Image 1: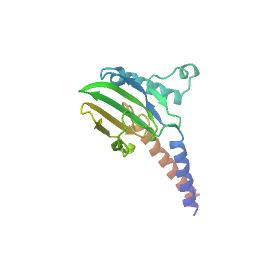
Image 2: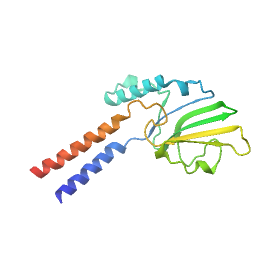
Image 3: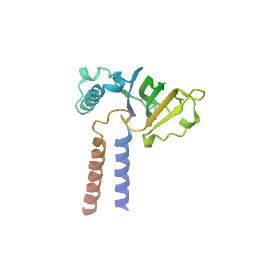
Amino acid sequence: MCLIRSWIICVFCFGLILYSDALWCYQCGDSSIEGPCVTDTAGMEAEYIRRNASLQEPKPDKDKVPYKYLKDCLNTSEICIIERIEEQGQTHAYLRDCHYTGRSYSIQDPRFNDLDPSLNHTTCIYEKGSSKRLVCVTICDTNFCNGPQIDGGSILQIQIWLNVLCAAVVILRQIS
């Protein structure tokens, strides 16, 4: 019984550590496929690295500098989004941002209602009444999933080490 209780406590603590932060997304917008929202992945990476460094070693003067490409969704959003609007092959809008699933996209279409953010795939729909305007939506539900994936293994490494730590605690409790 003690073993089960210890394991439940470890899993609960692990869940609190892993899921206590709000969702973070990339944010930007452009009216061209050549704009920085599409092309400046180096700038996005630099901000991502700065954010991670500030989490590990906070520096009050640097931490106050606002992010251009990163956004803390502050529990107002459930998903990250990329939305692209094209007309006759020309990109007119490219957006990355937090998105609340109850809100609509640039066009109202029931085919967007069933998008699954855990799949992180793109759906494109021609606007009704126009065969020339295309709206593509990508939704996802993990931190920074709507932009460059810089070090996607860090969360997995944390999960592995927390599982190892929990297993060690359980084993040590059984031995003593």
